[in-house]
Length: 374
Image 1: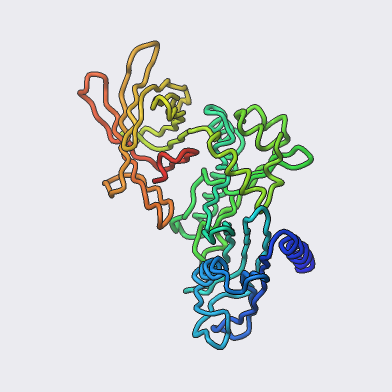
Image 2: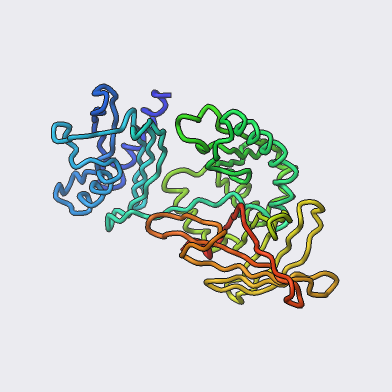
């Protein structure tokens, strides 16, 4: 593994040198907690202009990320990383850094991270990979989850709860954090995020599904087929993947998937497609007991989604989902980042005659759209 990593680092360093005056140096630091564990952190250098302000700007990002005030070990009061290493690439005036290692807080945490920088400005760039649920058609997402994912995920979570004495999990049945389409035409998706803190990691649920393309393709939308199969998205790394993500971000379908309960007892799953041009929302939902789709149609804005449910052309109910950046009782919290804040989603179901109302409580929200990301 170390030889492979060293080879990659050597090759990428040569590529970087050939394309610009920027190179990425490897600075070795020692963990100040045990005073033994070595780490390597990136430091940008301009070989033609040592005083380039862009270099200083990028390196400040690195120092902030790794919580240091200097690259000089003797000037550091504290360095809490262990076995940290990185890969780098410079291409088309973009810098890519991929890091992995352990951070010592109350207990060791294994951390993987990616950073992208514009070498014309030194700005840290936001990269968003294609969400797993964006690959599927509106119907295909829940069909895939119900048929191929949840039957294995639920027992894995049950075992995790038994192992941990019912400690609360940080993830859900619907969290698929890695996926790939392989050269042998197999599709692999995996839950591998840390669902428990360090002390309970041995109990964390792990789940993976592997399917051949003739099985997975019927569940995908045209966007997913194009990205995975035609453009080999899974094989893209570094700058090339960032560039592809930017190129196709406007093509990602604007879909929402809600899972929850109506009136505290009627479990449901909902799939909505949003049209940003017309502000129309269309889709369906079904109750888990019967899984019979009920048509939904309505509108959406920055702070709400209003829907009518239809059966045989008649309105059988109405739903209102409210989006807010302020806490509301029984609302579902979507955390994005310190910069972009949070969104709270709460809902109400109402009968056509408005005589009956029930709260909608969500247990999971999966989105491919930025509607819920501000």
